[in-house]
Amino acid sequence: MVCSRLLLNAYVQRARLVELPAAARSGTPQEAYRCQALFVEQLGRTIGYKIACTNAIAQRFLSMPEPFYGRLLAASTFDSPARLDASIFFMRVIESEFAFQFARDLPPSARPLDHEQIADAVAGVLPGIEIVDSRFTSWTTVGAPSLIADNACHGAWVMGALLT
Image 1 (cartoon, rainbow, N blue to C red):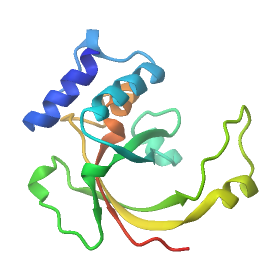
Image 2 (image 1 turned 120 degrees about the horizontal axis):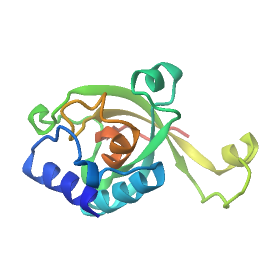
Image 3 (image 1 turned 60 degrees about the horizontal axis):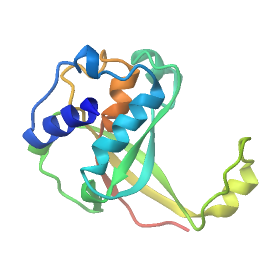
Image 4 (image 1 turned 135 degrees about the vertical axis):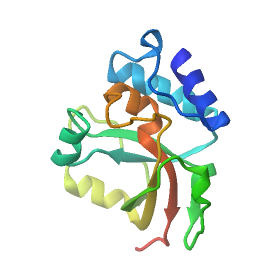
């Protein structure tokens, strides 16, 4: 998929993209997630997922209809305390986060799971800091599919100790 190759090249070469060429842009969220999967597959092992754009203000700001997800990678996850070289990121946006470690997988379901089903599967909470980063020079205007493909603008994650 051309989209994933362009994002990977930008990542490896430490270059930014103005936008993806029209022929390489994902037209739907499903295509964007396929691009994301191929892109991050080249970067290493996925250890979890992040949810981006979870509030109405962020969604309006980025013209996003709903939250979207990206992948947390072993290679870009650091135990706290950590000191990261700012020069490896294009942006230096940080967000405080709470991650949930699951003790077991949840079963597939056609309907949303209820609070008790989810809470029963949670082993604990991990406080953390996400470093937001993007391969796009104007990440606020490239559109939802490009942001999804760009691994939901994920740069790194500093992970705190598990709280049970």
